[in-house]
Structure formats: structure tokens, C-alpha cells
Length: 83
Image 1 (cartoon, rainbow, N blue to C red):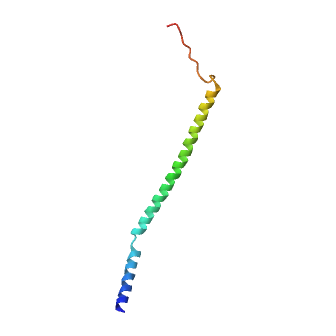
Image 2 (cartoon, rainbow, N blue to C red):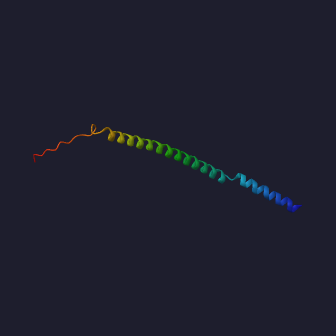
Image 3 (cartoon, helix red, strand yellow):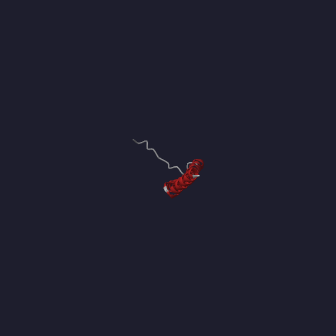
């Protein structure tokens, strides 16, 4: 019976020590902060990609429309043959 009592006391003591330690708590807090920052970065990159992609599509459409409009938008260069 003494062995069982000693073992139970040892387990209680070890369990109380583990509950008193805060190393695991701070590690979990840091892991949550890193996860939140990573999610915010992914969301920011996604929004940035969407904006940049839209800007390139608008520019491509503008360039295509100007080429289809003809030479009205292009400046004319007159060359002189009197050199």
C-alpha cells in the first residue's frame, strides 16, 4: 500500500509541476501569432495579385484597342529629304 501511495503522490506532484510550467503556453501563443501573420500575408498577396493582374489586363486591353483604332492615335513623323 505504501508503494501505491508513493506512486500516486509522485504522479500528482509531476502533474502539478507540468500545470505550473508556462513554457508550453507561450509556445502555443507564439505559434498562433505566426499562423495569424501567415494568413494575413497570404491574404495580402492574394489581393495584391488580383490588383496587379487587373492592371495588366486593363493595360493589355488599352494597347489592343489603340492598335485596332488605326493611325489616328499615332504621331506622324515627317522626314525631310533636303539633307
